[in-house]
Image (cartoon, rainbow, N blue to C red; front, side, top):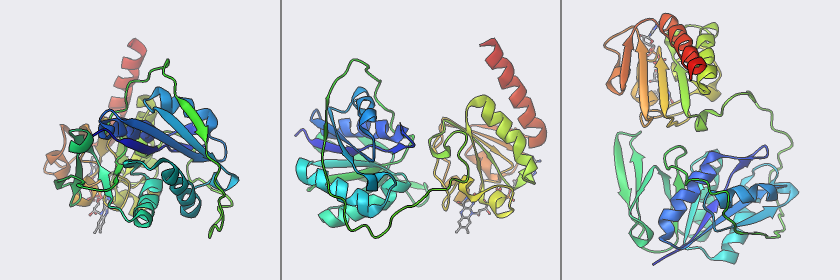
Amino acid sequence: MSKKVLVLGEAREGALRNVSYEAIAAAKTISGGGEVVSVLLGDSVKDLAGELVKFGADRVITVEHPHLKQYTSDGYGQAILAVIEQESPEAIVFGHTALGKDLSPKIASKLQIGLVSDVTSIEGEGDDAVYIRPIYSGKAFEKVKVKNGIQFITIRPNNIAPLVKDDSKTGDVTSLSVDITSLRTIIKEVVRKSSEGVDLSEAKVVIAGGRGVKSEEGFKPLQELANVLGGAVGASRGACDADYCDYSLQIGQTGKVVTPDLYIAAGISGAIQHLAGMSNSKIIVAINKDPEANIFKVADYGIVGDLFEVIPMLTEEFKKLKVNA
Ligand SMILES: Cc1cc2nc3c(=O)[nH]c(=O)nc-3n(C[C@H](O)[C@H](O)[C@H](O)COP(=O)(O)OP(=O)(O)OC[C@H]3O[C@@H](n4cnc5c(N)ncnc54)[C@H](O)[C@@H]3O)c2cc1C
């Protein structure tokens, strides 16, 4: 049976996040030929709706309100529940982002439905959809089938490929007026620690440094390589604990989970808690002085050497390739 699937789009500072398009692709699979309805919440988001249609949404519903400018679970919760009540979807897809992780259990509990979180791929489609999600910090995968009720899933960013953009595609964009009331919290201001560069959780290339980087200064060659490759810098908890970099860069079980096309681990030993955050990356390159380092067990390419020699060499070679491309 084909389904109507509701997808929550995410925008930050006036731009849609990639996970919005990935969620539409997941929704298409789940819908089994049914309808994919994207939802955008914010204070001024209507102009972004067209992009969601071009990436596969059949129509878009926007809810605009000054209280939706910044995410709060109260505000977004009220808005999305109003859309769900209007649309009665058979399935719902959120990104497994900071926002999605916070909001999805609250919505599931309000609706008294189950939640399949952190889905990395989907087998089958429509009623036959089976959701695959990593468990035990990525050491095993679980296959989940929802037998009845609304299918509610969150998808891990960078795992499900977006559909090819179709600039000629059109679809209805409507707005729903929701009276956002009784907020228990109001965000006055968001002060970003690092506002520049590529968003680590969505980066296609991540250059991560560990305790082997030895100092804050030691991260500079990694940043240079990231700049050349259009990527983001990440870190192990070892590097964060040693105060070489900010905790917002931490990747792993208690940090961010990333799945870039290319992950370069420099001076990282490969503790299980670190692997939990990066082992699903498509290509892993490890640079470590110790040939026995655990990181080489998950690496597609291993370089035994000093990162302070290897990283600048890579940067120079990539620069040459870019000039000659
Ligand atoms: C509950 C819990 C949660 C945790 N969560 C996380 C998490 O989310 N993320 C995380 O990363 N860790 C996490 N940890 C910590 C984890 O167990 C490790 O301690 C940590 O990942 C080690 O960081 P590291 O690899 O940078 O440091 P180390 O283990 O000290 O490794 C440094 C590596 O650098 C290499 N090296 C040194 N100098 C050079 C050089 N010049 N060139 C090349 N290589 C060099 C060394 O050979 C070594 O392999 C957690 C631990 C616990 C208990």
